Length: 195
Length: 70
Image (cartoon, rainbow over all chains, first blue to last red; front, side, top):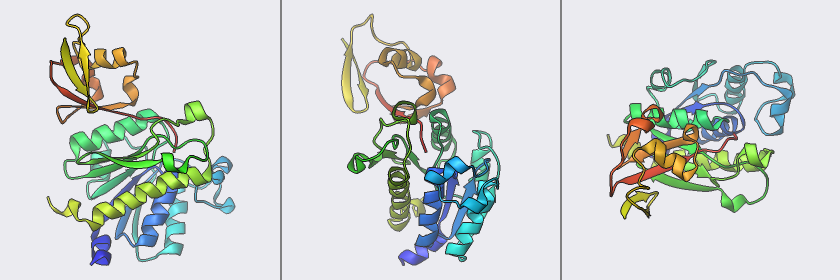
């Protein structure tokens, strides 16, 4: 039953950096039916300290690399990849099929933009966003909170890269897996199927 | 005194202090508008409308603030 629900679910992943690359892999291993993954960037050497790519993928588009990595992990998951910059204009169309969207951006104003867009324009879609994951340690300060019916927020709400200055693989992955876990829960408990 | 409920906590303002709109409230709270998603009485307010969204006594406001990193 759970397997069936997961297989019927479509999840959008906005950004494929430290958060998005980890969320994508966790959801692929969990057996989500379809992932829509979006990022405009290419893999850089500095990404490898926390993002799920490999040395030989440096210089290639993140979307192409993640499609390849996900296929090697679980070829049964359908993956639609787009190498574009997400905006409030194209988000509703690109993610129109998605039941849930994972906000996996880096910049605060981009996080603001996608959450506002999904809550304002995509009435059937849940968004799982992140605020506060920089630094190391303090694992238990990272929490998953339901802000409103369609907004779930992960993070410690204060550790920004602007103030804390460092992102570490383990703490970023903790936040990413909070996100993935919240998404699995939403799908398993069937909230998204009600409407 | 006039009240607003901000993220579940009641806050009192004197009549002169009471923020006329959402943008004014954020300035009062020292929060940068570009990093905030706001709901007033459960309705999402787009950032471009913060300055034109008038506030009135008794309203319930949810402010979700984003810090960078991902």
